[in-house]
Amino acid sequence: MSDSGNGKILAEVVSRSRKIIIKIGSNTLAKEDGTANFEFMQSFSAQCKNLINRGKQIVLVSSGAQVSGISTISGWAHKRDVHYRQALCAIGQVELMNNWRKAFGEQSLHIGQLLLTKDDFADDHRTLNIRNTLFTLVDEGVIPIINENDSVSFDEIRIGDNDNLSALTAILWSADLLILFSDIDGIYTDNPKTNKDAKLIETVSDIEDLRKNIKIGSANDFGSGGIETKLQAAEKTTSYGIPMILANGKQNDSLEHIADGRGKGTLFLADEKCLIRAVGRG
Image (cartoon, rainbow, N blue to C red; front, top):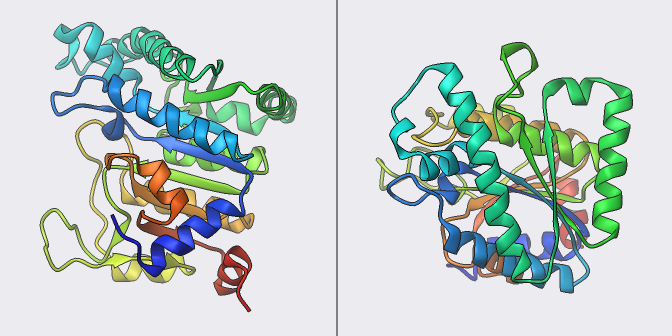
């Protein structure tokens, strides 16, 4: 972990944000063997409780239905037929929410589930209902946990990844901050897993310029997204003035470290003026 200027800026952004959306990717939730990591969920729930005690409101967008399904029925791990994948998500979603229920229950917090599709964000009545449900749950101290409804989604109504789902939710809820936790420390000039000289890009205010200067790879084993979907999410949120942090969720106490200045990641802002407003400089 780092106590660099980047870490201090991220902490200041968190400090100035009250309504925070946090997205947990499948690779963050998965162990090396591809099964669900309940110990991570326990630790993460405790970190959320610490933020709530500091006056923050938390909405969680959680991947991991397939990971949880594989944990339950390991024999389906290699089945690629779409019907099996959707059935696996139906099984895994129950296990995923049960694990989150137990993890947050250890912190005396209740959870509520919302399963959404692209159509839900295109219909005014549905978006109003989603918004009202989020506000009611959060106001009552309940943690809303959102995922895409993979068991019924098909191409026409799929959002396709939880990076974009979390961005749409952040906009709908009028969030102050979106945090994407993945298995990387942030955006690099190249893939840090294959290029030791790759440099972490700490702040981004021009995403199109960023695209021209980095290499964008594909999604990894468990996740449906990749760097491109994270850039898409950043484009959505920053266009509404909502900053976004991309950080490594696999680090121990990753949320706590981002909040207290010991973490690192890439901060996305609409422009440099947003950085001044975010950290109170100038």
